[in-house]
Image (tube, rainbow, N blue to C red; front, side, top):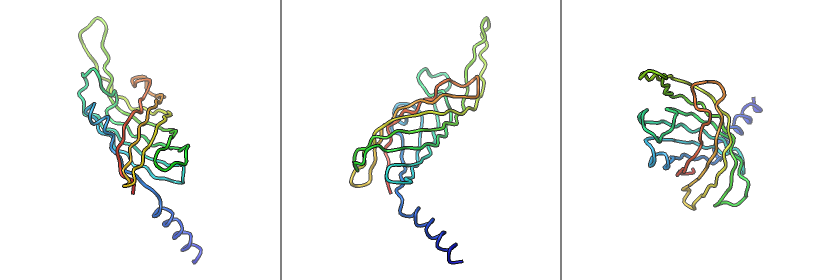
Length: 167
């Protein structure tokens, strides 16, 4: 019984002393009618896992917009430098996206909208700044490739300027 108690105590304490962040992508909020929230959990000094959720509120017929209506993105980040304030990172992610694709019928004026859900694997790189008061700013860019649906776009962008708080 003592071994089980010690194992549970160790497991719970490892989470209680870990760094965590919540973030908002201000680039999406300012440039598009899109909101992206992220949560990042540090599993070590130079590694973290996270989850981003993007919601697109832009109308279908706007020229510059995300093709996806919703994207859930679990990711893994590895930080390459040991510097506390500025840190370069690489990221591997899986994006699960859904949206609507416009298909125009040739020879008619009918426009058909096809819904899709797809999954993509991708990579990204970026920089993170951590201020002394636990404010964080990270810039990242990357792309993933959709794998399953013929209606989904080929590439899924992963671009952002996140502002967050570390606790």
